[in-house]
Amino acid sequence: MLDTLPHNYEGFSTLGWPEIEAFCTELQDYPLTAENVDDWLKGWTRLEQLIDETSTRNYVATTVDTTDEIAEKRYLDYLENVITPWRAAEQRLKEKLLATGFQPEGFAIPLRNMRAQAELFREANLPLFNEESKLATEYSKIIGAQTVEWDGEEKTLTQLRPFLESPDRDVRERAFRVSSARRLQDRDALHALWVKFLEVRQKIAANADMPDLRAYQWKNYLRFDYTPEENLQFLDSIEKVVVPAAAKLLERQRQQMGVDVLRPWDADWRFTIDPLNRPPLKPYTTSAELRGTSSSIFHRVDPMLGDYFDIMDRENLLDLDNRKGKAPGGYCTYFANAKRPFIFMNGVGGHEDVQTMLHEAGHCFHAFESSKLPYYQQGDVTMEFAEVASMAMELLAAPYLTNDNGGFYNHPEAARARADHLTKLVRFWCYMSVVDGFQHWAYTHIEDAKDADKCDAKWTELWQRFMPVEDWTGFEAELGSYWHRQLHIFEIPFYYVEYGLAQLGAVQIWRNSLTDQAQAVASYRRALALGSTATLPELFATAGAKFAFNEAILRDAVSLIEATLDDLESA
Image (tube, rainbow, N blue to C red):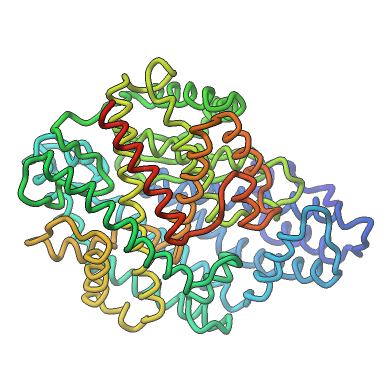
């Protein structure tokens, strides 16, 4: 099928919608039978992969340089002129397949997902999706333009990270004050943007006959295995189990630092602030060193995973360094037709860059393993398990952080890095609860969420519930608007609890690796290779974990982390 379809992105990206529509029409008009449905799906897969890759490459171009107006225009034009009509055509293809009742091998779960997506589809939402994407681009531009003067030099806020992690408390405080003041300058602009997001999303949910965006996203994110109410119960369990554990860790840190109270520049969970005032870890100086040492680690975790990473390095699929005008954060995306993942991050030479590399590489390995499945729709893995791939890799790679295992550190440094990582795991569950709780509130109290002061107040309330240790006296405005820096809240609504659920799965895989590392990695890879051909509980089970998030399983995970931290401290 589709004999004249270009074979690669370069050839396809020059086509406009009239040429692409002809391929859609060929698929739509093709008489489906039980005998030819496989060939038809492969044709649909080829077309979908080319459209997906073109759109993804256009998006990547806007993030590697947020000042590139040509790239931005290309991205937005493609959304408007190709992705919008494609979504309508794709809906017709889904309806065509669903009407036949055919179920190719390995397609039960994709069909289940397809039904949910087809039920949500409304043509009236297509221009609204484009509007969402434009607003997300605007968010990236605002954040990407945030710079400050530091000792006579212009620096991005990401480049301030080494100073926010300085062993000198005065330097940390100065960096905190400077960066926070810069962020507050954009408070009004970001809140105005947030209101636009809310209004667009209200319309999307209403068009799909959903009571609110939460109900819409639950179906859109294919959350068949837990409800919003169970999600909120997970937050309650975190409050009971994890918050006391985090408070205990921070009290130990306060005592080690010899301060009366922990201030924001002493205890930001995102940063590595050493309570013994040791200089920050400096694992690498150049991106070449980061790539080479990361490769060495992945080869020790599993030779094939190391080979996957080396392919990305050779093919320039790693954009690692921070620079002015680059979008914030880090991500892994996938060029579907080329069957290649791509890592984007903002490295500045600290240990957090190592963790980001391990995390995003886990997503890459997932992409490589599942790319062997024959149909595009079999790779649509929900985030609850996609994040297991990334978070488990952070833990599976931990034994190889030492120099004698090919890693970045001597043994004391590696112990310090691991302790920092495990401490952040505990504290992340707390922070995740703030972000997730904020989104549950915002989209079920939509008019209140349009009020900047009410948003700041709700964020502060949730922070005090789940992150009660730091003293923010005098910085109430900075705390209230902290949510502005969380891009998920703006760009990917309701995408955050997945990290907390996945972290529980990752800790279980790590527990298995403590008795048999090779077997744990083998089970992990088998689960990645399933793509979306199994249910969420089945994916967890194949990886050697249980999909559950009650108090008991959470307590087991926290106990393992606490015991390991005790061992690392006494080593």
